[in-house]
Image (cartoon, rainbow, N blue to C red; front, side, top):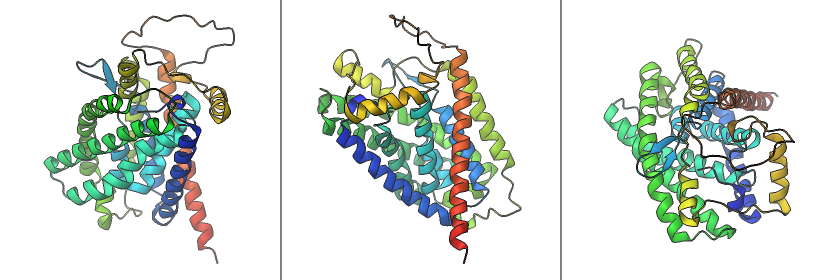
Length: 348
């Protein structure tokens, strides 16, 4: 569901940038009070895991489309809404800056669409009251599926709305909506099952980690996160380095919807103003564009054959590992910075 800059006007893009920045600042302020030292590495490995998991597109049967995990609900259920939002923002920023996955003008929209609804609406008002500290697998599964589906539906509709308000494309509101919502319902069903599996594992391994069990959450000196950290770190390496090679080559739900409406999926980039400037920046920062090695200056563009499956390439595995490591490092840096600010505030 990563939006491209071509869908957005500067007004809509910058407005969502500002709105997302406010939400991020609020999350950081709240986290400054709540953040425990042991949560910082957990935020890092979970961010690395979500980055790697997002590289694994799965085919939606009978459609020619594919989907991938968004991951916002997994993060919110384990870390709580504030840490989850910052982790999701970090994942999407790394994807945009270093892999050109989603535009820089669209980054605020993407963080909002994939992070805000899951972290600040669905988790606290639906999942948390429904599940609480229950360990009933049926309840966790049902709550996970409903929550993920609702979060994705809100995100998909926001994509349509932001596109409509921008007026950059000729995508008709009705047809675009009728394609975006059902395809993300199918994607949500798969993500809901995966989310329930991840949450069930954490609840069995370290139930005190789940944010919904906050009253009994005592991350003191006796609490060891080693097993959980190793598990998610291993999953990130395996998903980014190996499973990413098996990702579906079908277009994701957003690309598929655009292609169905336009007939070819091609969108015209804006070649002026802030959109052009941000595109130039992204071309310089994205050292592994589209999760592959950057081509040299002398490379001659030519028609390429349709992608084959599996898409085995060193660039994909390298991208998965480098991206996961970058997300881990950035999130740990953010966590340490927030903790440092708390320490300064506490000084007389």
